[in-house]
Image (cartoon, rainbow, N blue to C red):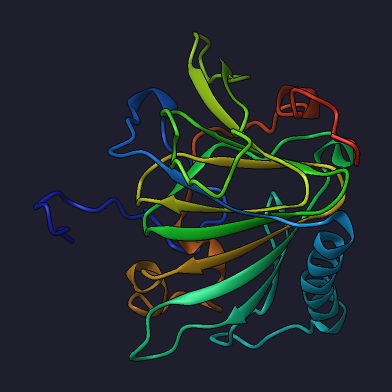
Length: 251
């Protein structure tokens, strides 16, 4: 498969593999993730929005039943949180949309892994009181200058933990603040990692290129892990991906 620039698109060895690993040292991001700050909300409004969307995910998981081969699994679990396939793809429309109710990283004791997708993504991250989201990548993250957003997003660089085979790898981080909406455009094959510090965080994610290894290849059950490739086998301790400041409703 060739993209518009004439470069081959990466595919998974098996689309049904839920933890396919790519050699971290052999990977180089072909582009950068781009973040657009969108909106600050009053804490009570932000909590209402996050709770309402997370409630859809929780309801879907409570109603989840075993599906027959070939049927869509609407309630799934990612490393970052529980997921509800809100708008599935279908023949003639190879895109989907899901909601994710974030796990609180500190509560679980582990971080989600750095990974990439073979299809591009659009993600809206929404936080409520006492909760931030740490967005990380192996490449610098571009944060757009939006005149209506007056407080710069905190950004810093640290070392990626638990590098396979050892060595130092820079990890670039941006913090999504409390009570905020922040959008992120993720080009295909570009590394990223999401970790929530606190209980009130939701992602609304749109995947315009789900045809690569799902409907096109007849992936059994259509699990949304089809386009995910991890850059490590290990899940690091939660301290390695915590927010650099402790979230608080007054910050």
